[in-house]
Length: 423
Ligand code: SF4
Image (cartoon, rainbow, N blue to C red; front, top):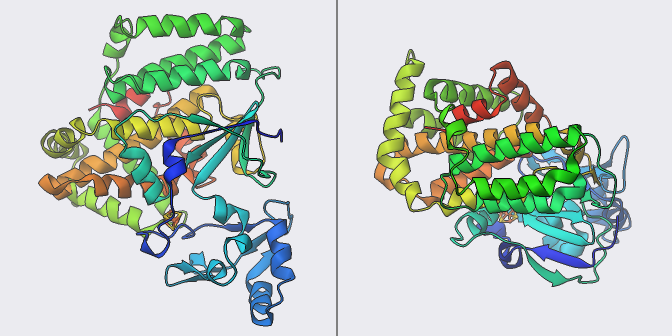
């Protein structure tokens, strides 16, 4: 990994503070808890006999240890064995220096792009979600000089724009491409669904050009998109695609059921799902057409009036998504396993996944708005976003399952994304 000469981070990263026992969630709930080698060695050499015995019993070396994932902490049911009344017993006894790197880092996500280390927040943490989503100003990276700290243990995605691009992945143009994506996602003259669909057209175009060996023309295409958007040139294409609420609801429910019946699921996500079902008056024998009508009514009466005055929430969600995942190209390499799937994913697949993750959250929220009616509020959005992020984005298997399900339903296109994000 190259040393970082600069650090790019958002204001929200700088102001983040863990709520610890005051938090409404537990960040180690349902996680595999990796312990890096340096921290494992501290546990092994601990001079408190009772604690050393606990570490021996509850922290086991992995079958194929790596420096970052050297050992794992035992889970009591679904939570860390060292969690006690909402507090970390290791931190209480020994301080932050004894925490595994993964625990110290969360919810900060680090990526390296050339000489810069970019730091974003993972929205699996409700406090990070509040900071990122509720800020009414456009989310942006601010630059500061390198802090001289050793980031060798960082779990990070890596991009080196001086390297040759791989087929379909024009990483040499990552910086202008991502800048365009952020500009588009922050274009408040467009609805959120229109921003997402134009993004889909852009990703497909970039992929096509890269596969045809035309990547040197990417700056011209970005300029053409910048000019075409205010001129409304995409309107005729977007007029040909649109909503199908019964299909959208059926697809989202299938994705949720597949996920919650196969892996551990955060109970606050299940609470949101129950509220969604009740908010749409979902009972035995309710037809998909009826659910589509109930969804539209909840959207019109409760969701849309609220979200119309909180447009920055989903804009910030999408920009944060783009920043933390090195969107739209994803990393070229990573220091940890989860990044491998992102490295392999095509531009088109990454777009479909972003649209699906947005749709899961928005669809849930419309049902929740139907449940809470006039009392629908920001707290419900924070719960839905943070728990859906944990449920779908922290899972190593879910992204591929989502992509396959959408492909099987013929929804893996910009037109399919229109079904998933339109009303
Ligand atoms: S979820 Fe966030 S605020 Fe809550 S304990 Fe974890 S890091 Fe702290």
